[in-house]
Length: 196
Image (cartoon, rainbow, N blue to C red; front, top):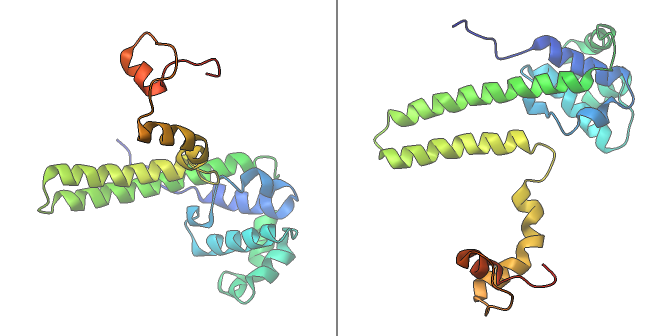
């Protein structure tokens, strides 16, 4: 099997360039990627500056981003480098696609890091069930972060709506509805009521 690169430099640069040339591109990618998804520190710094500007409802263009970066811009090639990013991007029409590529390869890099951590765990002296729990936790944290970037995880969203059920289940309320076909389901739901 051929080794595969875990970075797409062109997608990262095209994403940033698209954000520099389109006023509405930020809204299409803000929930898909974060600064940590970029490989190079210069690209991370540009994205962080863009993020700060977007939070303040400021325009994103070469001048405003350079200003937001302050003296850091000189460490990464100066204003000319930002102009080149914008100039080399043919269109902002595909920024959503570029963002998806950037995020995908960021997740792949993180998965490779988790694989290394799991290999290091395997070389330790911990019991195997503990190792499996730790490895599953690492992979689960990646899956949750990848799936819910920019959105609340379901557990957080459902917390308020599940509170009434949690209180019913915790006090073991008396059966109050019609019996259902399965005993366990009847106990869980407290039976069927006109409201349910």
